[in-house]
Amino acid sequence: MSTERRGITMPRETTTLADLLDRVLDKGLVVAGDVSISLANVELLTIRIRLLVCSIDKAEQIGLNWWKYDRSLTGRDGDDKTAIGRLEARIAQLERELGRPQNRGR
Image 1 (cartoon, one colour):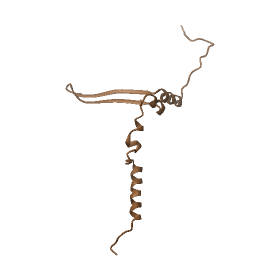
Image 2 (cartoon, helix red, strand yellow):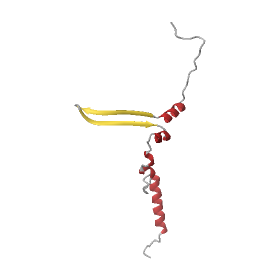
Image 3 (cartoon, one colour):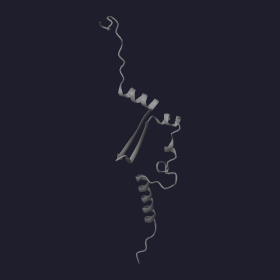
């Protein structure tokens, strides 16, 4: 006996990758896992993995906004540790040194 109905067609819903990504960023996706390495019933290493994928707006709604206060990302302490910040500091130092009069024993 067939469960197929003749004459009635049900539209197939297709989901594109963009739709899926939009849904994941809007709702959020959590992946959690633990990896344990043991030898002779002695636990040697445990790795806990927690991954949250969501939009910045969603992260702020649930209270995750650590990137606003991380000094290595914001450079608020005046000491920019990024490559661009180090290069800008070095250029400023070289410009100061070039602006000074140089004594060459004359």
